[in-house]
Length: 334
Ligand code: KG4
Ligand code: ZN
Image (cartoon, rainbow, N blue to C red; front, side, top):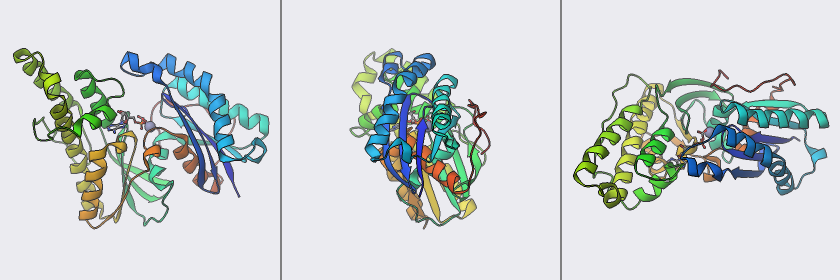
């Protein structure tokens, strides 16, 4: 029997979850709305908001899971990568909670947790597996031999896919985070209305800065001829931009499935909530005779449920941290 409290605070979501014998029993996510008016995450505001909300978020997770503080056997937290101020709130809270209740600590790598998110609700997996992780800060292809045995085989050399969605959305005058809004508008538009430059990259690496520049120049040119171009073509623009980003992702995915000859393929990270990506991912993987795993919607964007599942696998292996553990801003080897 194991009951673990998990905390996520790497960016602008304050989240807490309880996992009981490998089953996520609660997952409370408080998404900070304050950043919307600034068109992006303001680090100082994010850490202050985490401080304000972490206690009540943890309390809610404990109550929703129907457990008491005395039942908790370990405390897990996101060590990094992320914003230093945001990470510090979660790390300090977890350390204090563990000290006060004499509990072991489990540090979790945020990217590793994203990779494990499709397996919160489905553990019927045949390894090896390739996971495509597409978030706001990272875009990676990960080769997995087991739940905790993973190796990065490709990643973006510049912007992440989520960043490309958000930056394109900003150029279209949409709010932050723009990814979900592009997805919404794209439903009404024609994905082949406009075409944007596709990068030529070696092996399994991605690049999204070229498409961003291509969109910027295209919009500047069109607006010179018609100042209302964006408003008049918003749905077609969103559908075409989304289609272009998804194409880049799917091309590399296909290449990696072929090269590594895997029978299981998963999708993870905030952008895995995108409707076209989810559809194309499942179609592509299935057509290549492999099994597709996608996370449930509530586990796509940042959440403590995924931290909890990573912590559960580490708990089973006795992988604990000491009180001297510190947050790490940059991605680090797992
Ligand atoms: O994984 P995540 O919550 O945070 C990071 O660790 O970065 O990912 C957030 C990213 C944002 O860039 C957001 O725009 C994107 O995921 N996103 C989406 C959708 N939902 C979230 N992008 C496209 N379509 C969506 N439906
Ligand atoms: Zn994330």
